[in-house]
Figure 1 (cartoon, rainbow, N blue to C red):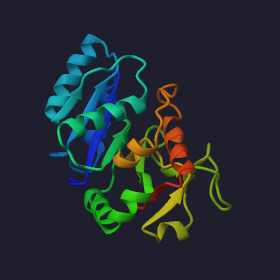
Figure 2: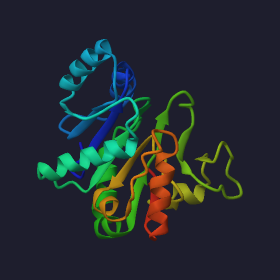
Figure 3: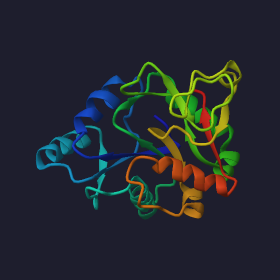
Length: 224
């Protein structure tokens, strides 16, 4: 597990996806990671399933969800809980349900990079992405989105099949980290981000990343 981060899910009638994909297919251990869930108006049946899954994985349910709650509001709810309960982690990992981590050493590599660059990242990095498998195109490892450079394969603006010059570095800057699973800097979010509740799910990450860039705060991808 990582001592540097907390984790957040936003759920609506998809708890079984969380269990069958993220938890079962990932090679990493989620035990003892402080995790939150916001339910966005699941059916009673799915809510009951979700309660059992959240209990099994020690996930804290945050009250106040509704069917149209924006992702950025879920992030604010998690940060509010962390503030009230004196949880001092500066990084919140926001995960979709249909992704998983194939790397067994993911936590140790992530902690090493965060620790080695603690001062720089805390002050100048707003979001951090990394390589995860995302259904249904799980054959491809995606590293972010942006205006693609020559030599990269263009697929809806995603950074896929990176050149060797990218794979040989500890991290690189991108316009938007791949926000199916990414880290958000808690302190810089509070300082610079003006929440836009019009982004329910799609493009909410692009909005956060863009706001950070306006303030000369970087979005990066760690090559794990």
